[in-house]
Length: 123
Image (cartoon, rainbow, N blue to C red; front, side):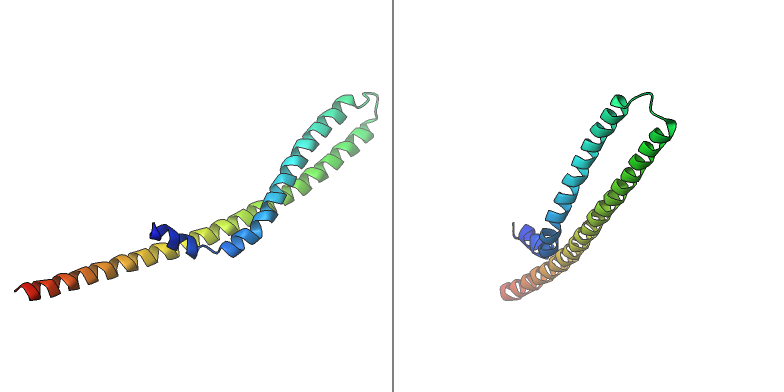
């Protein structure tokens, strides 16, 4: 159980906790904006008058394209933030792996030393 406690101590929780509200807020915003925009786009397109000029429809589609581009940029920023946090977690796990390997080596050496001392006492 103490191994897990050590693992949890290695993780930079300050960075994780600091970034978590931003990531949750961005994810909620992205989800709600995508859901709302899909509904708005369908409603606008279906309820739009069919007698509208081609120019009006093109401008409408251009505006939607710009909005989608902005959303894509926001999604890319969110993905970048998640990737950075993932990299921090991988670094922490790698440090933990190296420390566990070192601890195991030290324990084996100590066990060997203890066995040698016991063998000398017995013989």
